[in-house]
Amino acid sequence: MTSPLVLTLIAAPGALPATLPARIRAALGDMGAIPGTPEWLAEGEACDLPFLELAPEQAVSIARGAIGALPVDAIAQPAEGRRKRLLLADMDSTIVTSETLDEIAAYAGLKAEVAAITARSMNGEIEFSAALRERVALLKGLDVAALQKTWEATEYSAGARELIATLAADGAVTALVSGGFTWFTGRVAQGLGFTHHFANTLEIEADALLGSVAEPILDRDAKLAILKRLAAENGLALTATAAVGDGANDLAMLGAAGLGVAYRAKPIVAAAARARLDHAGLRGLLFAMGYAAQDIKPG
Image (tube, rainbow, N blue to C red; front, side, top):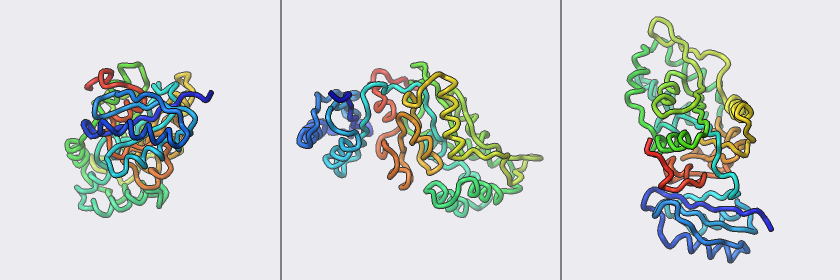
């Protein structure tokens, strides 16, 4: 017999119709799967549907056909080992709602220009390191007060506090890994309780940005290397890890992690990722790992 798998349906609170799991269960059966009994992880928000004899990507395709236009996500994976022991998370547009570099640029009157470069980089149209250098160079001479103002306006994504608090309470290692800047990752890591944080360093002198970033730049290859290093340091196989992010520079770590989730992702990332959260908040990542509502810490 094949190993048991599980399809998890996830939505914003109250947005998962009570009848949907049964409809998807029937659709899976029609396509040759052996579906089990749906189990609600959170009423109206998340439901597990165990199944056998069908590949995860096929189950997700069938589920999405039944979901249609409903704001519901579907993630399928092996049932064993769902609770990952290491999480790597991108920061901008993932753990926080904004792109912090774009917001800094607003104080130089260059937000539109910088944001356009950011968008192309995050969708894989231009190389990340070159794009980062180009954007930072435009900010040469900007007062560091712009960083503080940007931080004061920065908001956490829905479910970010719960995600990190729950994993920490369960003894998992969490790392914030960003192509942004340590000036922000340090504050986010402290505020949410991440175990580690890694990012690029803005070069500053006399309270002004020098328009440069310390080398080497933390790019997609560096994110992958950090995933592998932290897994090895904690005695974990990559199958015991998770990663979440939205941009092209996250693709390598998403592909290597046991559970790689594209969160509100750019088109190139959404197309390549094995798992996606397009509608639910970051609580959804906990449901994908098998946590029920009563297991989730408020943060």
